[in-house]
Image 1 (cartoon, rainbow, N blue to C red):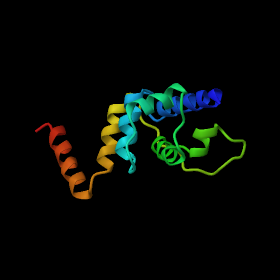
Image 2: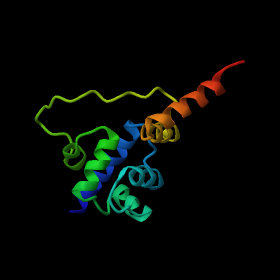
Image 3: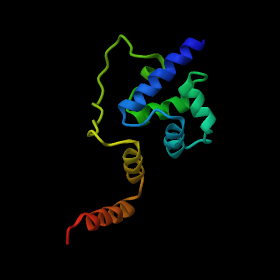
Length: 129
């Protein structure tokens, strides 16, 4: 079973990199806990997921897969032989790192009024006048 866990951890790290995140336990810890509506996980848990010592339960796997823009089945078991129709994943420009992704993810979770306020602030900061 250890080999299964190792393969999962490799897929998880690769998926995090592809999504613009550093494959580190602290990054996964913050990303997961800010998006999971159940009981939060510990940094040790995310470390175990990334080191191949454990795999998340299905509800947690679903959240991780959604955050990384992939199918839970593919994250859990690897690329399947069957083809599926899926929305293309957004490609982030070079230089957009995990910090920027976290800021954008947090912004997208704000209510419309607060998004508008943040937009006004960004516009004011970017004006040259």
